[in-house]
Image (tube, rainbow, N blue to C red; front, side, top):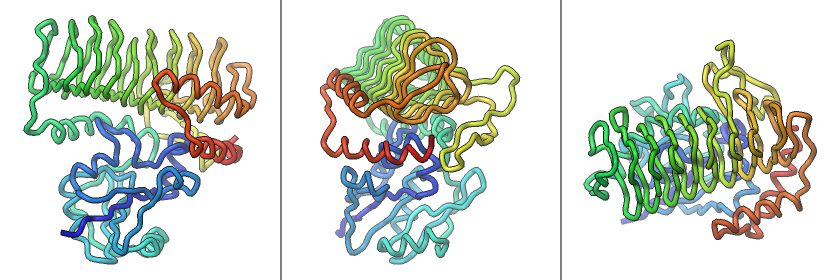
Length: 400
């Protein structure tokens, strides 16, 4: 049987809309729910997967094109029925769908790169997918869709499997079948409330005593939940995170820390970030009015239609102790924040400073900080990573 050659492509306009989180990764590697967008497609389709993303990222994330390819929009969230519809496409045919927000999107196309480019230029004809489509078109879609995706991923990942038994030292509220603990995880003296949604605890996670978890929640492998942490629904941690304090509807992509007291809500945090002790981020304006959030392609703050939106922080950014973030603050790549008072609501990449203003962060200092933090997890920057960050630095100049 011929193997599918599946290429997850970034729609350029969507990719730009998802800055600064998309600076450092293809959109398919965004965490939403328990797994990344790529892994959701891999759960429903067999084949060789690769990426079609921004040119400066393709050295690290190359595209493997064959004579016949299935191109899938990387921001579209897979379902089993959608995967079947994609596999049923004829050569040259396109699958389109309507999102819950009312827009029409290209889901997939079978063909060559030239066919995809024509489709993205507005020449797409094809089948209409019957169901509504979930897609990540804005950075806040990540936390808005996260709870529902935890539930969907939980059903797929745990089907026909048994996890660890729940230790008797824990207090369980709701259906124990909605709590899945992978091998090597340590969970003792914790309140696990699955009455509102599932709780998924991955391998080698430690949830320390006194913590309270209310699903839907997903804790990524090797993560640590410190004593007395309160985690509310719609929260996902990627691998190797450490959290404490209070989290509500937060997505942390991985390798990042918010280890101490302080509130974080309706937020998305990238990789290799650190929020110091007492760091807090508002997710609601005092006057309860609609939130505006910085939009990179527009170079301005745009209405979101939301009442709740907190901190959006891209990779390798740091905030010192007692940092206070205003509602809907957007922080770029490689930012170092310190000092008292509220920093501004948009902080450009490779900056350092605080409420009194920001200066450019020299690349040598950025790389030095990154290397020290990554070494704590046994990781290091590759030569390709260095080239990517230099490219991001040049691109970021357009958005200051």
